[in-house]
Length: 223
Image (cartoon, rainbow, N blue to C red; front, side, top):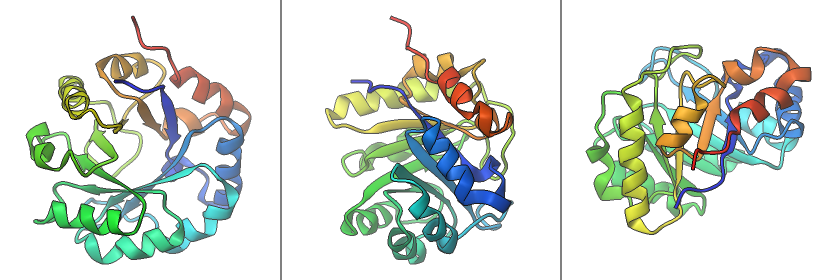
C-alpha cells in the first residue's frame, strides 16, 4: 500500500558555506527527510561529502537523515556513516558484487537499509533482496550531478517496483531522485513513489521560498 507523500530535499543543492543553517531551514520548511548525497569521484563522476559532514549537520535537525552512498566499494564506509548519525543508508545495487552482504552490514547496525538502482539497471536486479530493504531508490537521472533532466523511462520502472513492494506486504519506502520538480512530481507519485528527492526544485529560490517549494512537490495522488 502506498504511503503518504514525503519530501526529502537533497542538500547537494544547498549553500555549502552555511550547510547547518540550510538543514535547519529545510527542516523548519516542512522537509520529511534530509537527503545527503555522498559521491566518491569513482563510482560517480563527482566528489561531495563524507562522514565528518554528516556528523557536523546532525545536530541541526531531528528529521530522518537519509544518506545515499554513491560510492564503491561501500562496505568499508558503512560504520562511519552510521556513527555519524545516518538513520537510513542506501547503497547501489551496481556498487559491488555482494549487495546482500552490504545490506546485512547496515541492518546489523540497527538502522534502515536502502537499495538504489541507476536508470539502465532493471528492477529484476533487486528482486532477491526485497525482504531486507526498508527503502528502494529509483534514480531518474544518471547519478553524479544535480540539475539533470528527468528520464521518462523511469516511470514504468517506478510502477513495476511499486508492484514488487506491494507484493511483499512490507512497509518499504519507494523513493525517486533526479530531475523532479512541481511540473512532473505528480507523474512520479502516480507511478507509485511515496518519497520525492529534490535538490534544485527546493533550494533554487532561497530560504524564504523553501516551504512553498516543498508544498508544491507534496501533491495528492490522483484517485
